[in-house]
Image (cartoon, rainbow, N blue to C red; front, side, top):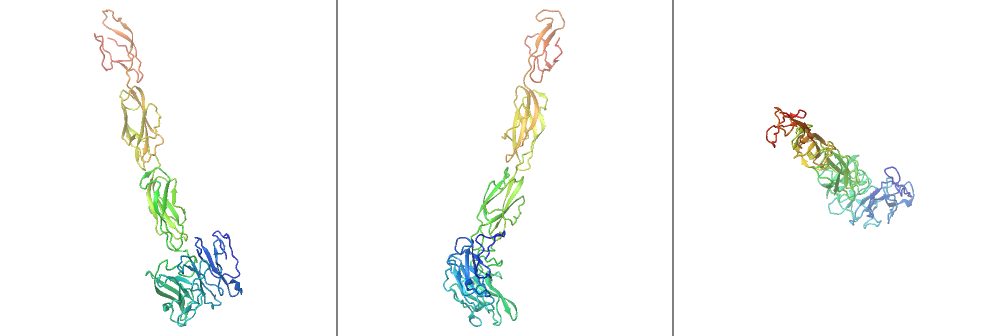
Length: 524
């Protein structure tokens, strides 16, 4: 007996060398309740006259024999075993017949518990019941099902060239039911039966093949038992239509889990490019516990179907480096037999935006850029920054006298159409710096800079009198007067000129009308 890994290496503990040939396929199931598959097989062939080989063996997956095994039989065994909880005690039992193609004289049917103990009523010698009672060859594989809906499993056997199917109860007694016999005594059956719901009426049918009037024949009997998994633990030769011989195998599809957590909420914009999903509650079908695994996919389509490659057996999945846009998460569940869930669970959209908005630009300024103004307020009209994802949230705005300031990442205004500064004092050049931020906190890496705005709110110094003609405070008959001035200083825009008044009052203040430039001397 060999046990070989999928990569062609030997499973540790194997092969097993036996004193007889192994001509039948093994059966697999958890006989000792440790959660691991065990292996059951019989031995023997007539051409090798070795009575020591008349046994049914059982090993653990590591090659160690199970306690209570092997068990002797009266002759060689070429019937593949069936495994089921025949006596209803919660553990798997082994059911097998004996005999072979060259000698159909064995009529014993055996049933042992997983520990090798014989089940009451076995071994038994079932018989055919049509047209007359006669011993039944047990060389063909048994089938186990509750075909009569009495809540107890039955064993169905077809002997080599037997006229019908014999039903044996779980206590080893013959079930006196003649409805599973074909009615031509000169014809026979040549294959183990199978039990299934072939007409989709929710009830079981028994099916087998044989001969009728010299031609091949297919026989189907209606049964009263419901077509449930618990009623059909071993419904055909080698358990299932893939001939796995594995009690745990199922074609029942697994069910998907329930998603119970996401690292970011759905349908809400996020600046994160990584998202994690958590789930729980998937289930796998069949009679044995199993661990589901999953194929997952992240896509920008709502209808993606994950492939049939397992991505994880855990309960979470993460996506990293997601690009901007709407994303959906898709999941399918797989069991140990490569059965995939019929549907796909999806969650989304996750709205991803980690691209910063553009910068605004100025559509108008008051006062004009790079022009001296005495205004105490500056206004810049903006064309709004653009953001293709979550949308513009607003700006960080700084007014100062540096041309390259980068505002910090602290929003102080919304997506306004203009910004203003004032009232301003002093004299100098002012700049506005505007940095954009979107709804999820992506900041533009640089800022829009507007300016210089040249503001002069400081009056120039008065000029200094250098001299006068005629001299001050001296009576004169001259018809004209002249005062020589030294221009006063101006810290801002520079001196432009003067407003001058000649009158007879000592304290007159000239108005703000420019009358004299910087260079000409005021005269009268």
